[in-house]
Length: 333
Ligand code: SF4
Image 1: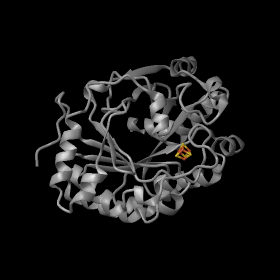
Image 2: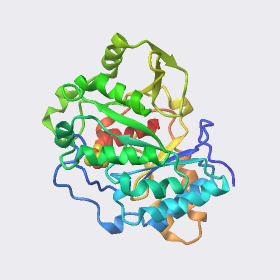
Image 3: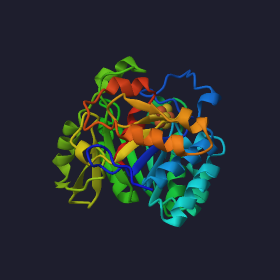
C-alpha cells in the first residue's frame, strides 16, 4: 500500500495514540482534582484501536507511541500491546513504545518487555516525595521509582520527561541531572507556557523558560549541541563531563516542522495532523461505518492531505483538547 505522504513531501511514519483520557494521578497542571471523563461509548474500543493502528501501519507508520492520560490504566491494555506486537514480529513496525507516569510499571513492565517494547518515557518532575505528592495530588513517588527500577531490570531504556517549573523543581535541576547520569536514564526537560486553561492560578509564576534552565546547566557542565533530530520538537545537547544527552522541548518551537513525520490520534478517534493546530479529522465515524477499511483509508488520506506546512503554536487549544503539557510534549520521544 502506498506510503502516506503529506502535501509537503513529508512521509508520515510516526503515530502517537492516546488510549485513554483517564489517569490515576491528578497533576495540578494537567487535571482538576475532580475530573469528568469521557463516556465509554465515545472511546475507541481496543479492537477499534487495533484496527486503526494496523491501518496506519499498513500505510507506512513505523513507530507507534502509546499515551494517555495514563495508558496503563486502560482496562485490558496488554491485549492491545499484544496485538500491536504482531507488527513488530513482521517488521512492519520498527518501534512500539509508551509514555507513562510510571505508577503501574512494576506490574506491567515484564509483559511489555516480552512483547518487544525496548524503551519508555516516564514523566517525573521531582525526586522529592513530598513535592511529588503535592504536584500529582494522587501519586506516590516510591511507587514510580519502583516501576522505573522494574523497567531497568527488565532491560528497558528509560527516558525521564520533566516539566520545568519555576519555584518547584528549579532547585532540583542538578539533582535530577545527576540521578539520571547515575541511573543511565535519558532526560528531557519540557517548557510549559504560562497560558491556557490552567488548573492552578499559580501557573504564571511557574513559567521557567528552558533558555534559563539551559544557562543554569551551562554553569556546571560543558554543553555541546547535537544535530540529532527525531522529526519532533526535541533539541539535544551532550553534557561533556558525564556524556549524558539532555533534551529540551519548548512548545513554541516550530523549527522541526519541515521534517515533521508525525500525527496524533486521540482516544475518541480524532486525528490531529499538526501538534500546534486545531484542525482534526474524525476517524471514528469512517471506522465504525464499515467493517471494510476502504472508507477509513480514504478518510486517513484526506486528513493527511490537510497536514499543514507548519504551525503557530496555539497552546491554549492543547489544553482545551485535554492534551496535557508533558504528554503533548512526548512528541519529542
Ligand atoms: S500529567 Fe500525566 S500523570 Fe499527571 S494527571 Fe496528567 S495524564 Fe496523569
